[in-house]
Image (tube, rainbow, N blue to C red; front, side, top):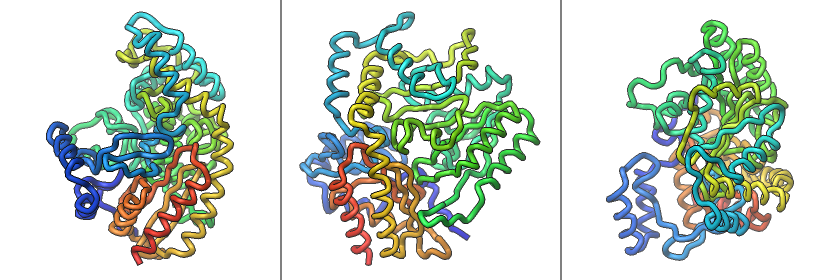
Amino acid sequence: MKMQSDPLRTEGDINLSPVRKGWQDRHIDEETRAILAEDEQYFLHQSMSTPCLNVITKCEGIYLTDTQGRKVMDFHGNNVHQVGFGHPHVIAAVKEQLDELSFSTRRYTNRKAIELAKRLAELAPGTLNRVLLAPGATSAVGMALKLARIATGKYKVASMWDSFHGASLDAISVGGEAVFRRGMGPLLPGVIHVPPVNTYRGMFGESVCDDIIFARHLEYVMEKDGEIGAVIIETVRNTDVQIPSKEYLQAVRELCDCYGALLILDETAIAFGRTGKMFAFEHYDIVPDMVVVGKGLGGGVFPIAALIAKEELNLAQHISLGHYTHEKSPVGAAAALAMLEVLEMENLLARVEEMSPYIRVQLSGLMEEVPLIGDIRGIGLLFGVELVKDRISKEPAVEEAERVMYHCLEQGLSFKVSQGNVLQLSPPLIIEQGEVDHALAILRSAFAGLA
């Protein structure tokens, strides 16, 4: 039986670790320590965040630069960096908009916000042509849950254990991560969690379970309960890169249609080219009733998110679904439009399609060399490298994953560690092959260092 990793490590690497402290002792100078101490003094402490690891002074392209001048390739980026950091086209659009119209007060609209809503409606397939903007995707998830209640008359929601939909109280209610939920007391009523798709489907076609079994879990709950008005799912589980089969998501779509529930897909971290498509659900030949997007929408510069819903769900005029102060931010809309323009101008979706198989082949070769690698999962420019004690028991190699991460940080490569033992590699879509080769060489040297 596969052992469970420390729940404090589910969503990412933890900030209270002796390995982390050792890295800081070796690599942080006195000036940086003083800044970190001040940060620690004034910010509330929380898991996976404050206290912080290091201080950065610049982000540009695929690189971060710290206070000591060290450059690090960012294969994490909180998934805001589809077009890299500080893209000149995005920065120019934001500066221009600041000079023209910096804020749109309530009761009024503005051209940039309308242009963005129109563009999102044009990009989304089917009748997904109604938009609400929000300052963050967690808020967009909340709007989706409210709209589902209004549209169906049902307040119950089915969601997945291990899922992540944001950190607000309603979002952690439908989410399934212990590090956000544990000890919070009563959460949103009516949320029913089912086992997630967890195929661990590797590059060589292994699968230890059948996706349809998980669809049947959901079917059983929907049939027996009879009052579920929405199902919310991450199209692809971003942090540890769980990729459902087409059959599974098509079965979920059919179940929602059969039992009168709305399908909400959360693509906060994976829309806009990360998987090689504008929206990840385009790989599955389905159209959800609503899709939530965010993170990279603001071009790595401005926080903005959106709920895109089907035309027939435009029926909530009597109630405020969002009504956020920065809902129709002209600056945020300018950043988002510029990001979408960069995707098109630089043909980044095609680059993802070209680069993805190259990385897949390189990681496949690394897996043959390194017994510690139990599985490799990938779609587009999103890869998960799962480390295990051995490939039979699949016991998570948590300590080894942490050591690999800090070795890579020393050599100039940053990425997320999820579930304690999955190295998540999520580079900017603008990355060049030479940069990929350099990153993989660093990763290979980290495994050699373990030996």
